[in-house]
Image 1 (cartoon, helix red, strand yellow):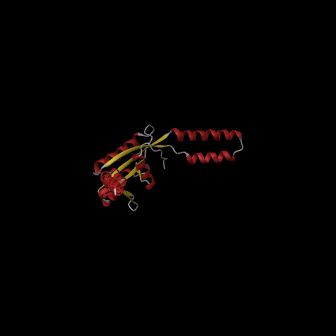
Image 2 (cartoon, helix red, strand yellow; image 1 turned 60 degrees about the vertical axis):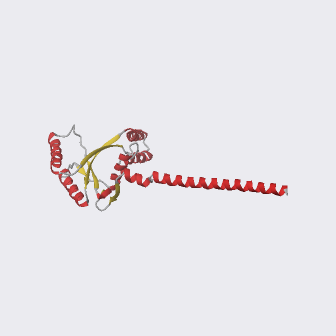
Image 3 (cartoon, one colour; image 1 turned 90 degrees about the vertical axis):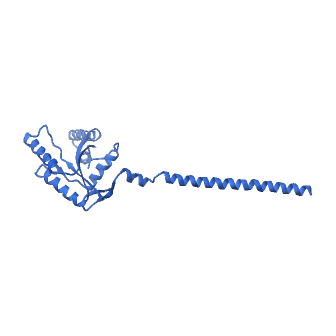
Length: 219
């Protein structure tokens, strides 16, 4: 009888211990689940963070512009740079008059942005490599090697500075009007001050602006 009572006591203690372990395990699972829910509420998704940082929503291929949040429009034109040291005074004054007219007549927002792009000489390099492979004259080969070396050095050590005119509109209708207004003033004549760009070039510019240390080739 004493043995039976001892066995029952051991079984009872074992049951209590097992129950306590089960309760602790359930509490831990509930606590972990609550923590995950709190973390998911505290930390916004990556997609939401990107939308907050970059207000651009998509590229309108029909009107060739970027659609921003709330339907506003952003677009850009390339400013054609000139050698001011060798340009005539008449040419300088003509370009200044164009910009003066734009600032007097254009009421929207404008922003001039400057970026440095690596000098891309890959096409010229391919040409001289082809010439070098086909040339048998040792004197010509040496000249071609020198020319190829110069192009490789330029690509590694030289940059091209480009300027862009950003303009903004409240909707597509205003965008079309603003673009025509800017082009009619600045892009007239043989040596227009600005010119339109492709979609790829515009995207490359925005990528460069948002990734300062990125190495992108000029297109």
